[in-house]
Length: 444
Image (cartoon, rainbow, N blue to C red; front, side, top):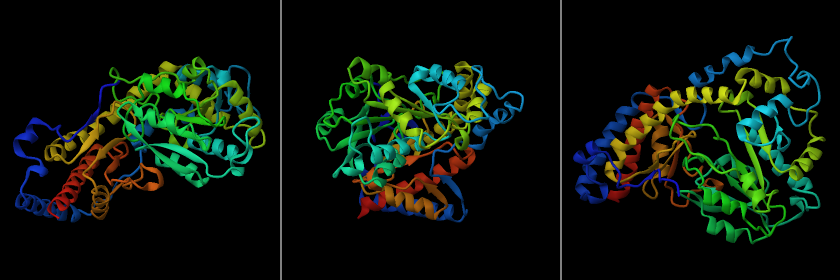
């Protein structure tokens, strides 16, 4: 099992421990006094008329600037890739060959197992579900629209946009708790015995929002799954494959496609990734990797949908990075920008909330989020207080199916977009709001 990076309420800095005791150890009078102090601080923050946004995991302007040279690295005389394909023209439904070669090296997947698309891996996921809904997931499979009572597994806390896709198509969403090394696999293995369960959403590396990476054992248990439904698929969104915060201390996960082949289940996983948080989110390159049997079926369906993706944009990426080493150097620059932001958030959580015993939170080694659990019933109140004072956070409950956190505890913090100075202000206010919510609950 990987080293735990989820800190419980007993963790706090030495500095904080000398100044505070846990709210659970305070008298009602002490709680009321501390609540009054934080309410006064909150009023001061409201008077500042802040307008700060921590609601989504968007790259900041300084990160986007790292890729600006890509906009000028393809011109009229250089639109042919090294296989002779003209990126300006129709064709290449599965992507530009030279770009597929780069992705082959980056994700350690044979080019024959890869389809490259437009800018959005989420779009590829939606299309995959939509095609299965209307025409089936595989040869000889019943279209999902002709079945009733279908279900999809949703490890939670998880990615709200994943859950929204399957909710849109009418699936019943089944919450699977996240553990320190990935989803609760005992529960997954039991649930897939139901032939109405058609798939599971996964973010295996630096997961959204916990930052947890799946252990080797979890990946192997996924590969050994024996679902009752032959059209069950693992939707493996490797969104943060190279999104490390540190050059040395990095998580690595097993290759799900390789493990599934070893286990005799080569068709189980559909693997997604993109360059959206490597270069430009609005014009990245998305990837789908899978077994040859899966890809042959998907490409047959895609032929009715498109004549080919934006190959000029794919060529831009090839020319800009050159090699996988070029991508790694680029991501090291990204990490240098993101790392101080994550450290600023964690420093304030360590100082302001942990000593009071009211926060559990992750210390991710990569990805785009920090997951915070407050006392039961305090997340919505905290988010509402922050919004009223000018800081927009991800909605409480968004990390669970149907947007409903059963304990109203989890808040996803997205440190990437604001500059450090604005982020620090937003987090100082967040901590005040969290204290108010926890203290209000304590004095009831």
